[in-house]
Image (cartoon, rainbow, N blue to C red):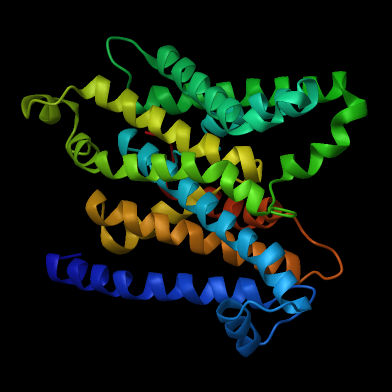
Length: 332
């Protein structure tokens, strides 16, 4: 792909993705078990009157769409940063164990310490943070190579999954409330959940833009980045911790939704290249679009059953991951 083609694709992406995000958001507001005409949506948003449509939109669908946007944005940003810092398009917060750390901490909080449920975003972040630190330390050998980080992450992911299952077996009488969360979903998400995660999500997303320059420099290789005066290991660790914050924030509200951080940044990278000045913001928009679209499909196409969005995204993401793995042949 030459520079002219890449620039043209970037321009098209900048125009089409925000339009697609707006269209998907309207779709999410309009469709569900009860369909709402577009003129009614416009009326409800512009006028403060009492109606059934207003209750559905303002109390149920609008906060759910906004939570989905933030969840998708956080997961996509986390995946984009991890893929860059590890120089591996197979890196994803769900695959290498970062989300699993947040998931274990969240399950412990919900099952063993329900009185501390208001601290769920913090505990999920701490779990993801500690998981990222352990992975980094296990991969360290006079530097932490991207391949070692991925391999250590896969092993930690399996271990944390086993520990999560162990907690659920030990507290089997309390598991029923956790099972939908483990599948990953936005059912019942309200303004409370939005207020719950918004501060952490906004801080993480804003901080991710400050990681654009070091992420681009790390793409040049460790030696080249060091010659340009960069503290490679410190920057790599900080970006991984930022990814943990983003993943932990998403996990705390939406549960274990996978593959968003893998699929979205990889597709954007194929379209417009690896420059994080374009890749990161477009991944954020694409992640929000994908989660809202998948959630709307999951709750409206299978009526009267509401399919957890995590299951639908796994059905989409798993074949994509296998195709990507087959094309690469290895993690190297």
